[in-house]
Image (cartoon, rainbow, N blue to C red; front, top):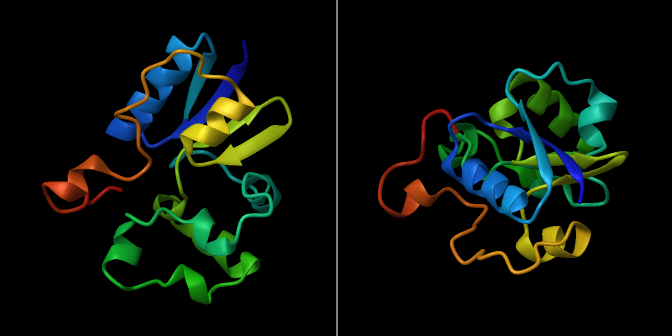
Length: 140
């Protein structure tokens, strides 16, 4: 099993569920606060690989949901600069195992990458569950 460095927003229900899934699958999870981490541009950029810039962003971030920011108009350099200034913009979670890094919690990818053998993942999701019943979290 793997040791996963898991950058999260403390208090995020999805991140809690995601950590529980990883732990139930036998992985060790070391949680870190995504919002207070002292990010360096190259370090943060390394989590996004070849994903399009739009997929680097937390779609539930207030700046995006309120229409103040449109990720599809940004290049990589602009995106990283904005994320360093406002970590709420970073899609969660960021995960690292050794030198391998990834963003988001796509179940198929996480299963292929780490293995989630036999774990009930029917309630796992990447989007905020609050959005269906109430306004987005102001701290998202």
